[in-house]
Length: 100
Image 1: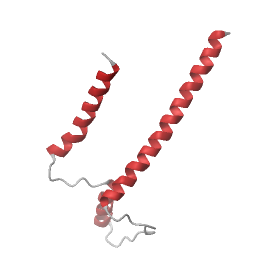
Image 2: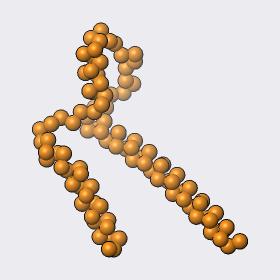
Image 3: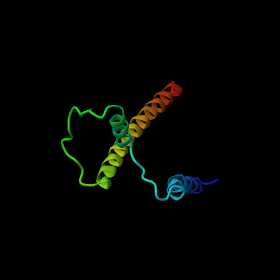
């Protein structure tokens, strides 16, 4: 199987995994863990007050999601770079060992 076919299959599987929950739970609210935790804390201790407040509140949920996705992408980029760097170093060292 060619690399292009493998990539196409992977992309289709990713699309299926992403779109399926949106189709199955059409009118659901996909809340984050922070919002759910806030509700649980309010149930356990109604007098609870937060220790600090946000420095800046994003103007909308979409902006907040964008910033979260950007943070995840930057982290994945650094992680991928580090793994690639280590693999390159190992390959270089192994090639040098084989030539000796």
